Structures are given as structure tokens and as C-alpha cells.
Length: 580
Image (spheres, one colour):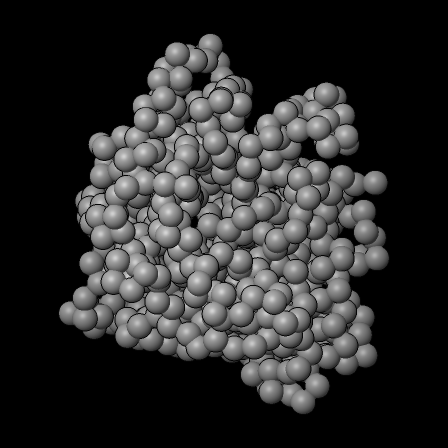
């Protein structure tokens, strides 16, 4: 039996030096001493701190981006560098701006003001529209939308009454959080810090991951407004430092981004004793642990009659999902689910492979990538390797025709966390039947509950049988974020949506995690986010790997996120519409 779970990122390698516990004790004590003071900082004052964070981040953006590109083997002037500007820095700035707006709302009205509307959904749930949030969003993300679905039984009155609970009694929420940063995406650690501080009310010790510890000087500069008064400290070190801090009596709760293996090592320990403790549900760490972990993210392709341009666009869409960050994302798609009877299945897969082959391969910078890659291709020696891979690069790889009935297949059970994804085809009598089958397959077979995407042509969305099946799938899919004709990663990027696993995993089977980050409107009981986009938007989104003007557009977007202004909109739109 294949062990279900993520093969991907862990909290870091073992330290090569003895852990300086006195220094770590002093860091925790210094931050803890400021918890009471932080609790008394008003929403308006916190908004002012975020305004400085935004300015300071933008001031170091070029140096931050250059170091990230160097570590990942990217030319900082290349189109591919645009993804670092966007996911590594831009999404952090957008979150900081969204939190700042909510804090100003709290100061003025007592709670963040979401745009709405609020709609009723199946399962006694309501959904709050959180995107577009204003005039800027309506222009920059025309045709896109985002909703946060609440847990069953939550009413709109309850949503409003429980928003921003921290700010109704900040002293009661004070404490010290440990954030164990991720090593893959540069913005993850700082974003998690913002959630802990501004949504949950904690002071924070952030431990950088050894993989991207080179970013610490830039984080120290960007977050100086929070570090100087003692509300935040950033430390470095490997697994031994992390273990010491997770068990430190001065730490009240923990947030980790990594894999389920990382979570289990923290909560239950490692080796045979850790396995015994997990089986017996005897954790060594009993303090609250929230976590954003791995996922075998599915992409469901609803069959329809697609034009050649449709095929080419969606091939580029899915190729982008794999190639972004060299495939080292917890939200990278790992299994494409097609209809076995779709007449254009082969055409789509051929276009996907052609697109992948046209894109530069990437440095396999994340530890263990080659070993993970070899595990998958050993199980599937017929894997299609695409693009030239020399030196420390890995090829883009597609494993076709994975059997949907082989429930032990590694492709369905383990997150590859490298430049590889698979494809499986489900039999069904009709497209509507396929959507129902794909929903059950994602929920019951594919491992994890973090995120997934569903792609369907407008004629499928409006079909009297297929359309309702798609909406039923959106309601029934047990994922923390669902993209409809839009890569689910945008739920992470928008910040006004929530990002995390579908709620309900027990600590002994954590899968994709527990808790949400982002959540700029500070909802108390979110269940999942749903983001939607046009089937074929114009212009091509700047985050597409095939967009040769990506870096120039992202630089414009970064400048806008740092200081939104109507005067910047024309230049940003011109850059986005420029033909590559």
C-alpha cells in the first residue's frame, strides 16, 4: 500500500552546529514581553505600521527579487522573473494593503467592510463575495470574482457579529506565535506573520527555512516597523532550532507551512516513537498548531467543443500551473483529470506537451527534488519528459493515462513537489456524469484538500445538464480553495479570500492542514474560497508562463500595489496588453 501524503517540503535539514538555546530563549522572552503592549495598539496605529511595511518592502523589492532569482537560477531580466515579483513580493504587498484597509474599517465602523453580495448556497451555507473589492479591482481583474463560503448554518448576521473578533477584546487574544516559514515562496513567511499579528493578535517569532534563509536581510528591512518595537523577531536555523522552538514553554501556538510529514514531526516526533505516538494520538506538542501543507492538486477538464484557440489557451494555462516556481508549490497541479470519451482529449494533451516543451526548464533548487522525480518516473517509466534538462535542471514531465482504479498509484497519493504532473481519464456517459464522477474522484481518491481547479467552456457552463453539475461540484468539492476557469493559486494571491485546507482533518490525519491564512476580512468560520475567471480572458494574464512581457507587467503591478493610484492604471494596462 502506498503511503498517502506529501513527499514535498519539510521544515529544513538538520543543523550542523549546536543550537544556541540561550539566544533563542532571549528572543522568545523579548517578544513575549511585548505581547501586552501589542494588544493595546489601536487598529488605526496598526494600519500606520502596515503603511510603513508596504513602503519598506517596496524599497527593498529589487534586491529581494535579485537574490531570489539568483537562488532559483533565473535571470532577473527574463520574463520568468515576473513570477518572483508577483508571488514572492507582490502578493505580500497586496495582503498588507488589504489588511490595512480592513484595519481602517475597524477603526471607523468596528469591522472590515466586505463588498458583497451575500448569496445562499447548497448545504445551508452562505457565500460572501470579496472580489472585486472596489474600482481598482473591477478594472485590473475585470471578469474575475472571489467568494468565501462559510461553514454550514452561519448566517450573515453571525458573519458580521464575529468578524475581527480580536479587536473586540485584544488583550484576551494576546500571545506568542511561532511561524515556521516555507522555503519555496519568498512571501509565505512574511504573509503568515501578518495573519498571526493582524488577524489573530499575536506577537511572532519567525524562523526562516534554510532553503531561503538568504531572504532574512530583506525581510528584516521590509518588516522593520514591526521588528523595531519588538513585536516580531526573525531567526535562522534548521530542524533542531525548529524543534527547540516548537517545544518552548514561551511559545503559545505554532503555524507551519510545509508537508504533512513536517506537521507530524512537530506534533508527534520522529522515528519509531513518533509513529507510535501518532498511532496512539499521544502528541508531544499539545499547543495549537495551524498549518498549510501539501496536496495532490487536481485540475478537472470538463469536456466540450473547444476551438483551436481554446485548446492553445488552456494548454498554456495548465502549463503555467506546473512551471511556476519550477513546480515547487503546494498548489502546483499534480493530476489532470480528463473525460476518457472526450473527442479532443488527445489534442489537448498534445498541446499541453508542446507548450511545456517550448518553455525553459528550471533549476531543481529545492532539496530532494531529484529523488522525488526519480521515484515517480521509476513507477511510470513511460513518462513524457519535455524540454532540455541539463546540469541541475529537471525536465517538465507528464505521466499520461494513470489508471483511475489503481488507488495505490503514487501519482494519486503523493505530492511530487518537482517539475512533474500526471493525467488520468475517467469514463462517463455524459459530460454531466463526468463532472459528478470527477467530484467523487477528487474527494475520495486524490490525496489532500488544499486546492483544485475546474476548467469548463462557457457552452458547458450554460448547458442545461452540465452547468448545474458544475455548480453542484463547486458546492460538493472538499477543498479549501476552488478555481473555476482560473488557477486556484489566485485564491492565495487575492488575500481577501482565505487560503488553507478544507476544515475537519484530525491531528492524526492532517493531510493538507488546519486553519486559514489571508482572510483580510477576518471571518470567523470560513469553509472555502471559490475564485472564478473568464474561460479565455483578454489580454493573456501576466502570470502566464507564455507571456513574454510578464516581468515588465509585474513591475508595473508591484508599483501599483505599493501605492495604488488611478494615474498608474493606464501604464499598467498598456503593459498588460502589449503583445509579446
